[in-house]
Length: 65
Image (cartoon, rainbow, N blue to C red; front, side, top):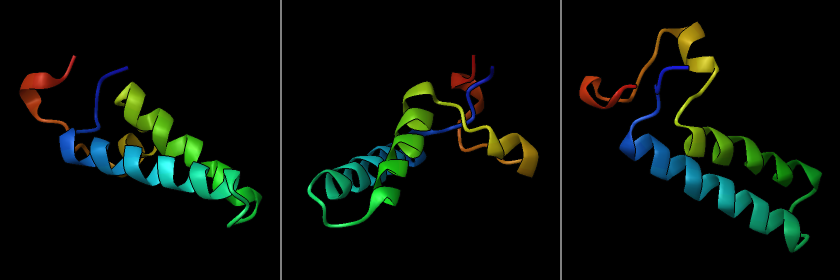
């Protein structure tokens, strides 16, 4: 599994994931807020399974492993 999520993309995914989870935990939004786990996990793993399907990469060449 090669990294395909870069720095800014990763930070945005973490923020969106945490906000959605917090909103779901406080009851502000419905069950779908728990889907914030998906962007959070993709940010922590530095891999998005949809990116290869779309031919995208936000990770710089030097930091791919």
